[in-house]
Length: 298
Image (cartoon, rainbow, N blue to C red; front, top):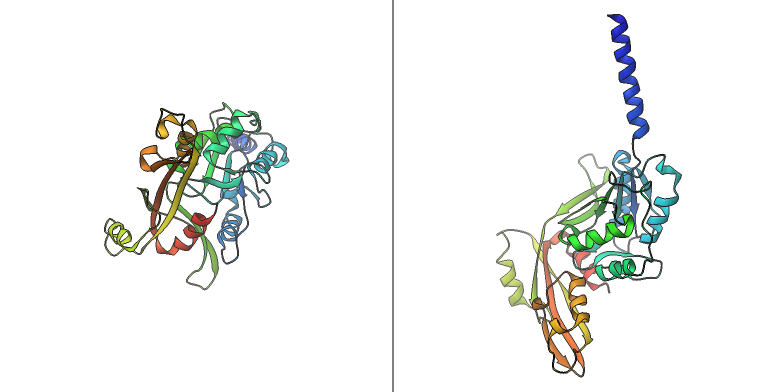
């Protein structure tokens, strides 16, 4: 009986050792620095530094998706297995994608940029010994779960045809520092809901429109509205054709925002086809200043 118990214990210990040896390394990338007066990335860094089991390797020096790729490919911290969770912490939105350039001094990671990069084979996907079907790509940014096409292109960029799982948030992701009950300053991650409407042809958010939209929000909610203008300006279609449906450039620009051409107001002038709309985002007023900063960014 004792011998059987000893054998069972040894087998159990070996299984634990095998599981430990097979464990995958996780990695978290903090992909930008804060603008003056903001502390999103500083709070995100502190949040994950305090949670090493969740963050894995914490990387604060990568500033492009190409930097992420090179770290994943070259770092010995991966060990003998493909990476487990690869988390990207960045500003972003469901319309703009990630506010991170693909390459240094290059374009930000919008849908159009990702698709163009893929079409030109400029970003070789990582091999299966670096990312495989057991890996997970976690996009720690705002609203990108609402852009499944964008998420597919991001996974194709990093993993090619390998079916890597991707996770993202449908809400507003906010990192901030708060003092808790014992007076300690600690970083928190919050995921807050938001709603958005697209108003064709609108130039700005006036008070009557603000009041109408507030009526659609639960009574008593502390809510603020932030307006994000959409302006599309492309060559007009050939003579005899009209509207955005006849313009591949207009269709690509609309798709880049995750919108439909019918959500914009269009007109032709001097050989140009121009579309306009206003995206109005309703969110908790505590995050409105951060949203305004993002909306004002090019």
